Each structure stands twice: as structure tokens, then as C-alpha cells.
Image 1 (tube, one colour):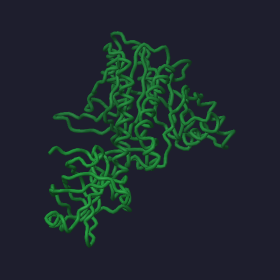
Image 2 (cartoon, one colour):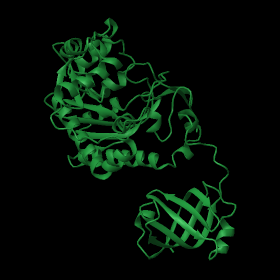
Image 3 (cartoon, helix red, strand yellow):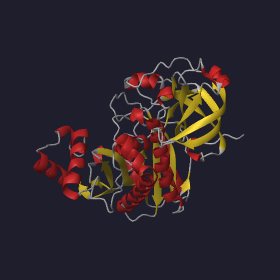
Image 4 (cartoon, helix red, strand yellow):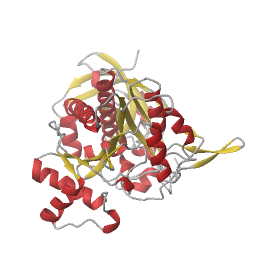
Length: 429
């Protein structure tokens, strides 16, 4: 008999189910097993008097073991798991478990030590179902617009973008680096005539940071598009894919998210509010008595981001807000400039930056000059080659999927939303 998922059980139809024994309760007359698979859980009720051989098989089994039952699902008003229980005819012990070393009250770092056990919970399974739906909906939105999915190399010959915050690795007889982002290769795709591309892939940052929203390896959703008139088209596109992603999540998991995480999935209205950085500084000073520190002028910091999220709600009743007109000293050399101001933006959601986007400089001589301003001439020679033979105007952005999921579900740390977290002090499991 083929195994089916618990969610697909039909009343009084013979079926085979398999999963982890979440709990096992042994009473005088009955053994109750709460069996859980990817789709949900159900109580398996074993009568000791009528199922003696099955009782023998289960006597030494503890929670965490993997079991397979054949039998029938029946309705029962006495059962908490949706008023259903499974009455088995046979059991197979697929794998027995030792006593689990992880308690529900364990701190986050202990949970990371035993991540494969931590992930077994309903809550954690839901996190990754939500993330799957979110990414898939954004991907589908782009594919409908004729975008091409590419996969860029993560081993690169020179330190990308700035020459700092990269991991160096030994590559045969020479050094190589783990890519901070696919930025240069996304732009190569524009010079190749692909016009519309995206990638969902890992990126690496050698930042010795131990905050709740930084990690040394993360999943980035990158987008690049050609023949734009200015960077507002990039903002429009990002709005569209975020609305598509959040709409799908709300449709599939809105009620479950509210039940498990206590968070409402809010699908934002378009257009998102847009504000220049200088105007934002004035609004933060006027409304919250906040002055940006001198060393952050021309940019934002975590406190400013948090207050910007509050301002977006207070002023516009909106969870998202675009901030534009950053200082050129605070932006990458490849951002196009107009009147010496970068043609780009940050997108703030729920008080946290989730995107830096921009129109890129596609004209070779100007790009070369801007790279030299940052002292990057030699480091980016291979990149500048992309623009010598014609390249259309283009722009793009990147979204950190792990951070996006963290904010969506109201979780305290990226550690919760990554399958396996990597930070300065963690390389295992």
C-alpha cells in the first residue's frame, strides 16, 4: 500500500500513514501516538486488549521515532486533533529514537546545535512553507513578464564590489573569493541582451556581525531589467512582485500565520510611499525628535530605519516606504547619478531595510571614472569590459529572502528563518 499524507486521509478508507511520533502516551487500556508528517498530525489510538502484537512493537518506542501505520481514519468528538483519529491495523517501526536532547524551552543557540530536531515542529515547517509560497509567487510574477532565471558563479576571481567584507578561499594555485552578490554578472546579462533576468541564490558577507538580522551566508532574490527610463520603473517592478508574493502567502497561509505567529499578513496597496532622504531627516526630527548622527548623514542607520517604519504607518498608513536621494559616498560606484545624486533607493518594511535598488550606470567612460573615484579601477577591470561594446540602460534590486520571511512572521532573528544559519561563530551543523 502506498503511503499518503495525513491531510489526504478520508474517513473509513484504508490507508497507510508515516511520520514522526511527536508524543506517545501509554495508559492502562490504550496507547495514544500523535503522528506528524509534513502536512499535519493525527492521533493514532491503539487498544491494548485487541491489538496485543502492536503493543509489543511499541512498548520500547519513545517520541522522535519514525513509525508507519496502516488502518482507517474515523471521526471522534473526543479527539483534539480536528475531531479525527486513526485506528491502526498494523504498525512498522521504521526508525527508533534515543531520548531527544532538545527541550521546547531551549534557547536559540542550543536549538541551532540540534537544528534538524528543532525543524520538526509545526511552527518551523510553516516558516518554510510560507517562504516557498512567497518566493514561488515572486518568481512566477517575473516569468509571466518574460524574465529569464540565471545562475551566476559564487566563486569569483576578484573581490566583488568593494574589495572588503569577502571570504577568500584557495582556488588551486591562486586565491578566489565567495561572491557578495551576483551584481556584476546580472549586469553582464544585460550586456548580453538577456534584458530581464532574476536569480535566487546564496550570497556571502564576511561581516563579523552578531545582530539578529545579519548572517555570513543568506539567500538573495536578485532582479535586473533593461531599457528602463529611470529607477522609478525598478521601484514599480519591486512593488509588483512583493504584492504578488504577499497575496499568495495570505491566500494559502494567512489564517495559519495568524494562529501560530499572531501576525496579520497585510497585502500592501500600490504605489508605496516615496520620500527623499533629506525630507525624511526633517520628518524624523519634527515627529520623533531624532537627529541622524554626523557619521551617518547621507545614509540611514538601524534607528532611523525603525523610525522610518513608524513614520510610514503614522503618515501614510502603509508598512512599506521607499527612501531616495542618498549621498554618492554611501552608494556603490555603479549607481547612475543625476546632478551628482545616485539614482536609487532603499525600501523599508516594518522598520527594516529589505532592498537597495538603483538604475545602474551603463556608459563605459562614466562608470570607469566612478570606479576610480572609489579606488577600484584595477579590482573591477573584468567588470568594466562588459560595457565597452554597448549595454542598454538598466537597473535592478536584491531582496534578502531570510530577512523578508523574518519580518513577515514577526520573528526575532534570522536564525529562525534559515534552514541552517551561518554566522561568525557557527559553521555547523
